[in-house]
Length: 334
Ligand SMILES: [Cu+2]
Image (cartoon, rainbow, N blue to C red):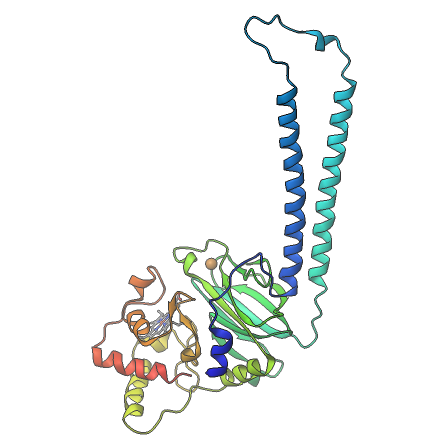
């Protein structure tokens, strides 16, 4: 845990103007270029406007009308307008070229040794499957990705219900997750840190409460995390603490929980809600909405509908001692 807090103490970043990966850097450069050019054009327009105001003849109600300009050939004005149109076209072409170069640069990310993740959008949480050619090495988690710094990540995007959009601004731009289709996104984090992502397409009532944390850490730390995720839920201790957890586990399996959630190594294998096998290792619950501690877990389990109205997890009526046992069990899911 000490090693984990080292990179985790900082508040998560969500800022498109600060790139922590090469893809976001390319996009940031395109943004800077576009902004610079637009500032130039805007200044030129405002400048021309002020110049025209300054030059316009002053007149009052008594001044006789001056219609001489109707007779004058307007060669200078024609020339100015032609120049302006030419420059505007050049500017637009420059933007187009910058856009094309950026897209090509984004497509050139080297992909050797990539981590493959399938990310599935659900109302209103993220399911993440870490893919591996060896099926035994695959695992599933939710709402928090861990990735190794300096290694490319290929995310295959899908949706289980409506259109969602993945956006982790410090690492890359947006990509839609469209039901019935798959899309991919490739990125690389070049510095360790926790980057906050947000669903960027309105997807229903709790759209705003659909966040994703991406934790980039040194490769060894990532591999250790992945190895832990591949394990089933840890065995429960003997003794009184273990007894409470054992009662909690029995409750989890007998109660509705097992109809929607998976905990590997128990009989719970449903996938309506997030995989809870290693719940205790996550920083947040409910898609980045609440800190993952006993108090918030207790309120969440008792009444998710008050915390995140409309969420697809029902209110649970249970006695306080049952809830305590359940919490004791969930705390063991490291
Ligand atoms: Cu969404």
